[in-house]
Length: 134
Image 1 (spheres, helix red, strand yellow):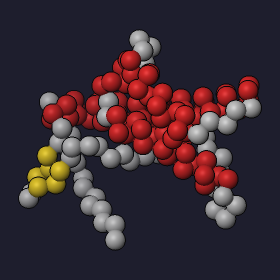
Image 2 (tube, one colour):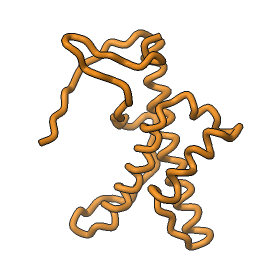
Image 3 (cartoon, rainbow, N blue to C red):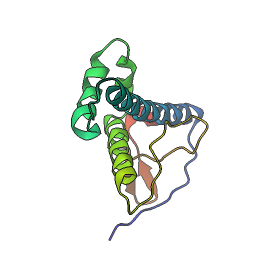
Image 4 (cartoon, one colour):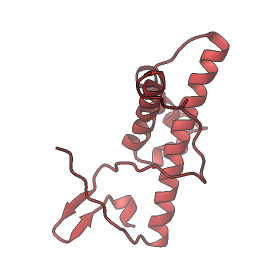
């Protein structure tokens, strides 16, 4: 059985800024993976698997000058964005589900949730990573 706890948080302005930036980085990873997958199919008729072909590109992107800013954000959340794209395509091609084609995510749309590594629920408190605690 899966269980979840929904908690309302009141972050400081700095924490809220970091959380919004994290959502932006996750959205960027999803959109970039979708762009690469679409582009490779349209140009070369090569169907890339997001989990096997695109997820390893995150590590390469973090080392590049252009996308080095991704190092500041949770790597698990970025990887999960690419996995979510894979699930979206699986759902799209499953005739039983009638899911729509995966689309690019907008800053102004509904923000997805993401699991942040290192957060623990204690008695009456939540322990968060240092970069959120500053």
